[in-house]
Amino acid sequence: MRFGLHFGIFVPMKNFLFLFLAFFCALINAQNIKTIQLIPVGSKTAVPIARLGSALELTFDDLDADNKEYQYKIEHMTYDWKPSNLQSNQYINGFEQNYIIDISNSFNTLQSYSHYKLRIPNQNTTITKSGNYLLSILDEYDEVVFTRRFVLYEDITTVGVNVIRSRDIKTIETQQTVQFIVNHENLFINNPSQEIKIQLLQNSIWETAVTNLTPLFIRNNQLVYNHTLKTNFWGGNEYFNFDNKYIRNTNVNIAKTERRDLFHNYLYTNVERNGKPYTYFPDINGQFTIRTLDAEDEATEADYAMMHFSLEAYSPYDKDVYVYGAFNNFQLNEENKMTYNDDESIYEASILLKQGFYNYTYVTVDANGKIDPTEINGSFFQTENVYNAIIYYRPFGGLFDRVVGVGLGYFDQNR
Image (cartoon, rainbow, N blue to C red):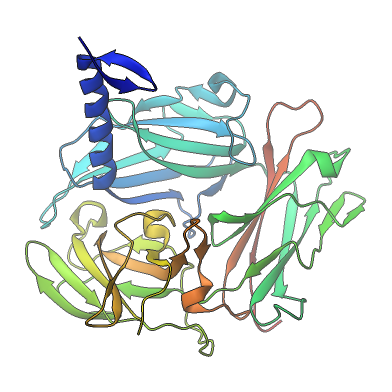
C-alpha cells in the first residue's frame, strides 16, 4: 500500500509516518529550545568571533527537561556563508559530529529545563583552520534543531577601524560611516581586489553586513578602505532594556510582577521614538546576559518568566511589528510577533525568557520581509554602536577563505 507524497514520489505509509514524526519532533524541539548563547570563553563580548585555538562555549536550555541526545555538527563555510570545498578532515582533528554530554537539570525553578553545554575545542573535536563556521545542533532523527555562526581568525594582519559621522549631507543626522585600514606586513597579497574579501558587521548582526568592498588605496603592505558611502550604516537608536535578576519584585523597567504557574513580568509600555530627540543611555548593543540574585548557579537555578512587552501606537502600522534582539538571534517568528490591542492602543507580545539583563528593540516588517529598525525608533548619528571588520584571504589557487584579521571599532559622538 502506498500513501502520501514526498518530493513528488509516493512512499510507503510507514515511511511517510516516520518522516512526519521526525518533522513534528524537530518542530517541537525547536520551539522548546531557549537561551542559546555562543560566546568566546573568558571574553567580555557576546560576539562569537575568536582567535584560532581559543575556546568558545555553546549553552542552551531544553524546556522539555528530558535529557535528549543532541549532537553537534561543525561545517566550514566560505566568506559569504556557503559550504566551502574543504572536507571535514582538512579543518578538524577528530570528529565533525558528536554528542553533547555536558547536561544538567534545573533546580528549584518553576519552569523545569535541561541545560546543555558544549565547549569547542574539546577532546573529540579540534578546529585547525581559520574561517567562517556553522555550528548545527541535531536531534535524535538527525534533524537540525538550530544553527549558530562563528568566526575563527589568525593574527596575521592588524586592522584599524574608525567610525565617524556620515559625510553625506542627506544622511549626516542619521547614519555612521565605517572606515578601516588593513596592515599586512606578514602576508603577501598579489591582487587585493580578488584575494581579499570583507564582512563589515554592526552589532554582530549578519543580516545587515556590508560586503563586496575593494580598497580605495593600495600602499606598501597596507590596504585603505576609506569609503564615504559604501560603508554607511543607519545609526539606529539605543536599545530598550530590562533586568529581572530578582524575579519576584519589580526591577529596572519592570512595572508589575505576578506569580501564576510561572512568574509574569510586565514591562513599562514603550513609546515610539521616531521624530523625538536622541537620548543617550548605555546599552549592550542588543545582547543579553543571564544572571540571578535568587540562587548561586545561574545556568541551572535561574528561572524563566513570561515577559510582557507593550508598545504605544495610536493606530496600527501597515506592517507587522516584532520584538527584536539577540535573545532570538535577531530572527522573526510567531513568538516575537506583536498583536495590536485596539482597546488599549498598544502592540503586545509575551515571550518566555530566562532571568537576566536584556536589550531589545522593535522593528517593522513589510510584505516582502524587509526589516526596518528605524520606523519606530528613528535613526541618529549619535547612537553608540560597535563594528567588526572581518578580513578574508584566499590567494590564487587557494582552497578556502582564511580569516587573517579582525578589527573592532566603536562610534564616538565627540569626534
